[in-house]
Image 1 (cartoon, rainbow, N blue to C red):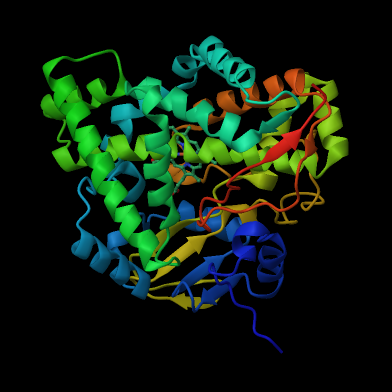
Image 2 (image 1 turned 180 degrees about the vertical axis):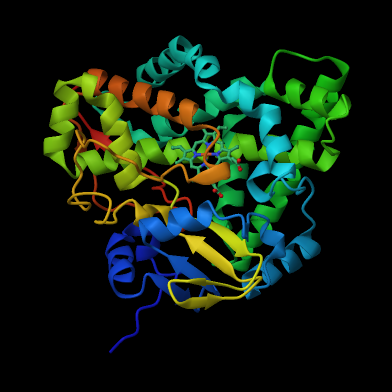
Length: 404
Ligand code: HEM
């Protein structure tokens, strides 16, 4: 019998990981992955329990596994400026302080004010699509939309977006460890340097001349003694740009692909755009972009009879939890009218996604605009290429045709 192993280097870990998640959940829900040198959890209750358990740290530098050591060696070799702890990788009380600094900008009422402008951007992108009756949902729409929004919020020129995309694609490609060629690791390091230099410059400008943007808010917090180091300031800018764009991009593209592959659901949404809110929740559950996050055990403990040692890494597979039949009826089915959809696509506990209101607003606008303006969409090809990250899963391009 072939033993069941989760190996993120397998192509299906990116193209279609769901059959593997199902097997793991059924046969080995607290799984030791040799490839990851870490535990892999696929049941909803286990994932949520770990994400809410203070015995686990989000500071990956505390990990004692092979991959963390390799990542640290690569950071030494290539040097990565701006890699101070951000809220994503810190624990309370530091996490609480860092999160508070920028949380105001992402509260639902602050975000709701952006609605007319986001709508304008969505319409303009479709107006500018290069060919009538054809659209690359990823390149023409899903990638620029959230990137323009977050760039504007941060106060950096949206015209620099091709450069932001290259930098963040390179950095995201190596998230979760070096399951990639050495070339990719070098590129990520080079892009890390370039994006840091870019933001160093922006920070210096805002110091001289503050504006009404997120970078100015962070600079003021750092300068007013909020105990935000220069490295943390820089790292927070980089994380906000990447977290605010790569994720929503992949939700729009993966979500559209899921709809195209379930034409009855697409038809339902296209004929009744009042369904857009439950539809986006279902797309987050069924085709969410973030497959997993990770925590480090801070003490020896047990998960369902398995001994987890202090310093070991635990991958919480939120995308697998979202298809756990213990919590979702008929979980492998896309149902845009699903009720009580308590998915964990945005994580759980103190690190749960700060950008949720913005991501939801962008996705509501993105899908309702497509439904209004892109009649009878069809996939132009089944030959889709998936990006290199098993953590942030998404296609590189999504060409469709439609009735012009
Ligand atoms: C569909 C889109 C998105 C998804 C699926 C998503 C998913 C997630 C997940 C799963 C986490 C938890 C990570 C962990 O526990 O280790 C997270 C955290 C975070 N997300 Fe998002 N995200 C999305 C969009 C955004 C947007 C638009 C922003 C805006 C800037 C954003 C900013 C953040 C930040 C700052 C954190 C860290 C929060 C903390 O550590 O306290 N995300 N996100």
